[in-house]
Length: 617
Image 1 (cartoon, rainbow, N blue to C red):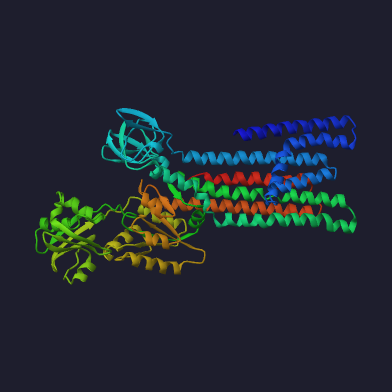
Image 2: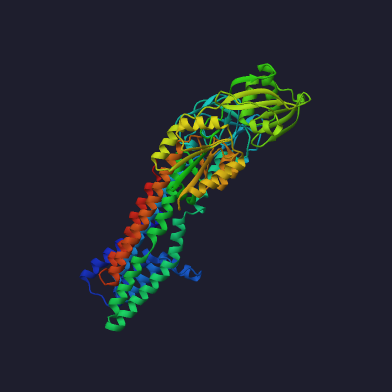
């Protein structure tokens, strides 16, 4: 328990003991009315003084209608009509409920914090030949840090010396360690398991992966789900309405039967029943718990609104390269028309020497020679088509059939399935190179799981040739495949799919978070395959799958649906119980003891239900 919680518990115990002692004394000793009042005011102020002060302070600040005001009004009113024991008991039980709620919420937040306990406390930095322990914020880019076995990686960097295994579970939800060696990248938030590492930092702490993730999770509650917004609006109008209703209940029946004391008591009971604590606390806690559960399986959700939308996923649209496939291309065939195979590959590799595209990297890897930059100039990447460059003084075009058509080159397709890269020089066709990508091991499983979960349509959009796209789509069991698309074409296809979805349905686009920004922003929910440490992916999308596994998407949707279901359960339960007991109060069938259950008891049950959202599959 926190210090504040311990203090509250002490006040509850003290007030409870005093309350029982006063009842025992009054059972044997007769005291005048004012003496009885004075005795009961002692435990009342011990347990309720802070509630009265909060109510008064909020009134001064213009925030009149909240649970503090309702409890103060109800208990002070009970004292005015001479119901001293009930006034003290209501305040005592209310504080017991508040204490329990505080404990439950604190436990939930502590559990979520433990799931995301990836913030490093310190960094061991080498300065002037000595290793000094400093705050991670004090380490500059380019400095060397030492990470011992068992320590958490404080800042992103590159390994200079040492071999080790890293526990990435806090970031990806995966238990399998990741091996690193000199030249390899290390990501902040991981735990060094075995060897000593010397690492050169590549980012400041504030820009490192761990800082971005923590900021994302901590600020996720700022983007509220529609249900949370409903509760906020509901409470704003609900509380004044019940105060007016209580006043009407006290006055109107009394005008007819003159039983003022009876109806004032019922009005005070009505106020106790009406406290909206169960809704105000449990619904946001449900979504906070859901976001924590997503984080635990390596899925980062940037707000409750995206979690709520994910629960309604109806159409899932995938990019191909790097999403359903590894994005690791290998040259599988070289078919020259004019040159030898080696000459054709060399020409293509030189023209692609400045490109960062996976296809360009695969061509350079297959060429396996150092590229002489002096042989290449005037490089221009043509979006959705390929590359134009001057190689050894002649203009070379390397790309797809659209680029060949634009250049007026007479090309021909390849009989092999894969990505075909055509090569032309000065308008003359030299031949083509076939590059194949490998489907991710869990991609087919991901599609099956999504369909089992009730997703109506799975679609793949790709810039690859139709034969390649259709082959991958058939292998994975996708419903639709649209191939040969430029970035703008992908947006057009998403627009068409958005028109086909049902009212209230959600379209999610899953891409790499870098090249698919236009489509990610146009979809209802953008989901990035955020390869460990990908800043661009973390920034670009609404949801990030930290370990690049498409199978995590079905898990993420399941967690989102359970979270929304729990929030709905709490709303229906809290409003239903309150409506029944409020009606009983109006009819004179509910006393203040039952009113306390309607407030505190319902809140406790709703909060316990909300904590289920934290569990993972």
